[in-house]
Amino acid sequence: MSHPDAAAGTAQAAAVARTADRALMATARHSAGRSAAVLGCTLSAAGAALAEPAVLGHTLDLLLRRAPAGPAWTLLCAAVIAAEVALDAAAARLTGEVDARSTARLRRLGLARLLRTAPHHAARHAPGETSARLTAHATEAGKVPAAVAHAVAALLPPLGAVSALFLIDLWTALAFLVGVPFLVLLLRAFARDTHASIARYQQVQLATAGRLTEALAGARTIAAAGTAERERARILARLPELGTEGRRMWQVYGGTTARSAALMPMLLYAVLAVGGIRLSAGAIGVGELLAAVRYAGLAAGIGAVTGALAALVRGRSAARRTAALLVLPVLAHGRAELPEGGPGTLELRDVRVVRGGATVLHDISLVIPGGTTVAVVGRSGSGKSLFAAVAGRLADPDEGRVLLDGVPLPQVSAAALRREVGYAFDRPSLLGDTVGDAIAFGAGPDPGPEAVRAAGRAAGADLFVRRLPHGYGTRLADAPMSGGEVQRLGLARAFCHAGRLLVLDDATSSLDTVTAREVERALAREIRPGTRIVVAHRLSSAAHADLVVWLEDGRVRATGTHGELWQRDPAYRAVFAADTDRDAQREAAR
Image 1 (tube, rainbow, N blue to C red):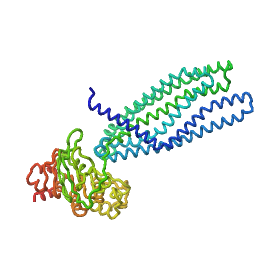
Image 2 (image 1 turned 135 degrees about the vertical axis):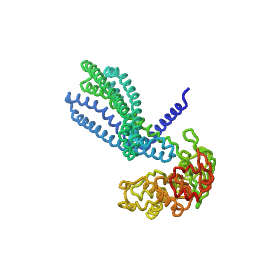
Image 3 (image 1 turned 60 degrees about the vertical axis):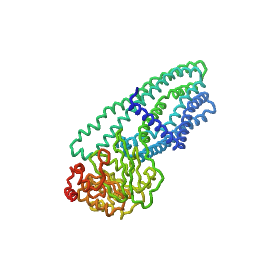
């Protein structure tokens, strides 16, 4: 009996493979016109290549006989060769366009799916892996539509050449056919071995890219800890394996090329020998012998076929890497709008969330009145961040419902949800060209410079931003910032787009006590009224909240004001044992 995990892994791999094939087919349809043009050019070029030996042979016979038509056929030879060159050039140009369009489409599909899934699903793939899937692997997969056209066209010269050999002379064609089974076996072995080696190579490449991205993100920490050599060794640990797989991949290709290089002369010699005998017998002419030899070369042209096969195998394997993003579950949205002017009443009904087979949030039922500031507290691992994610629908519960102003969140349209629900995180990512752009970034219309500056003041960021060379117009790349300054800009962005529900997930953890209190006051006085959920580690944050939700092991242990919980339960006080905010402790004791 197979292990359940192994069976699930096999099913997942099969689903990814099917999704990859569907994505490639959709991508091919997206560039169907250009792909058809590539196919037309490559087939026409192949046709010219097939016509060339016959035209050359006939021209040679005419010239040897000094026939009057010889010069005209010489011009025809030149025209056929020129047409083949022009068609090959046009096919190369069109192939570049198809590759670029197909790559762009695959990247858009992968990125769109990544942005539409819940964060915990996106986190299945390390940042480095995701980057590789959307760049190198998408580029390789994007070559498949044009590669199919080239593969089809690559079959025409061998098949057409064999037919031409039969038309020239039966015995010469039979001499060539003796070696065809060996060519077929060579192609089968090449396709099988290439697929396996490319898949292993890309897998190791993904893992190495992931480790490199992790190290780049933590470069300052690595430098401060003096562990650069250890990190370098960790990143490059699988480099020998990558080299082994790369060499194996090229060994397969090189071995196939070497065997074909040994086989092709034998086939040509066989054709030449039989053709010479037939020439001496008067069955064929000199020009026909020349054509037969050239057709034998085309028929044995395994290089073009193996090259096309290699491109297809690499592309399909890369498409499966990119398709791992396309199978991420989508966080679907409805079309409902929230009631106009709603206060932001949040209701959780029997909410249960499972992660990794374990229940992380257990049957949570709460009603948070609109306009309330709620502090969510608890020890590390109690489920605070997951509670915050479910509250604003960054993730859906496995059971239960979450409603905002009476409307179930899955029924709310994506535009309304992002307009009315805002987030600030402990490690915000700043997007945009300038500092002002980073604050203004979000759903809805541009808030304008005044709103950006007001949000900066509310988040305690205005002072340090105005000290930058160009203030809010300073490019982010030219504005190195501390963790606390980045966090303040993240808060400013959330304040700039504050809706009826604002969720702060440990968003003040890097701020000093004074700045954190300024932010708390701004939340109460300067930001649009609405419901505030604050994942709190600071005692002062809980003390200033209207309501505290105390989580323990994924369950709501108690709710109430901070003062009530502080007075009656020593375990609640123990949650803040590590907090050093003495002023807040004195305030709580009053």
